[in-house]
Length: 287
Image 1: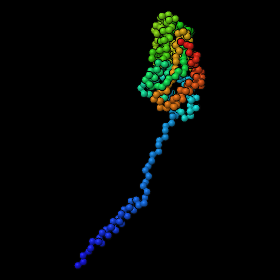
Image 2: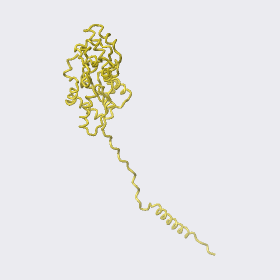
Image 3: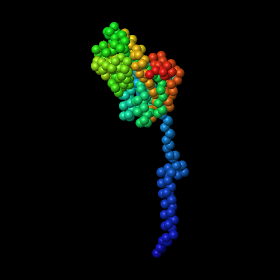
């Protein structure tokens, strides 16, 4: 009887194991294959500063619209958006987080409040404006001077929170010192409406819903329909001051600074003067 020795079984098992390993590697395609490169993600391109949102007092509509056209010509990719409203409305919107790059105010008070709250940066004065009395065409023969204002049966003014409304009350206080202590009371007694911005005051007069109102000269200059415009004596008038600033949380700070610089430039000053705003030098000596 022959007994098989164990020295032949391990050799045969090793051969079959090697063949199995080679077949496995061939099936998986891993023999001699280089490791696949890891996918790479290209960095996202930086957003372009091609939009600009400007919050501006209602009385700046025509002047800023004209300036905007010139600005866009020099910044071909710029989408320029304006929000024109009463200064106090715009301030409230900014305080509530509205997205804006630049704020242009019709007075210093609202701008100062935003600056104290660090919502705007380094405000700069860029224009001044002169309040006047506008008279409905039906009342032109009746109301010929500022001193005739108490004779108007229906007067419309701005609310105390809007700059033109506050300027109006200051004017009436000054007028009471020279035209009699009852002047303010007599005028206020004829007030039938208080509006949220100067354009609404003007509209009421133009539509015949009021006999007279107090607006800025720039607003009166833009009216094509026949209305009366009465100058307010210099000794009682109050000159409006317009500051401009970049909003602290501006989404497009570079363009915002360029817009402010453009408004403050000689070209900007010329456009504002053309719209009827007072030059800073000319208004310096006014009350």
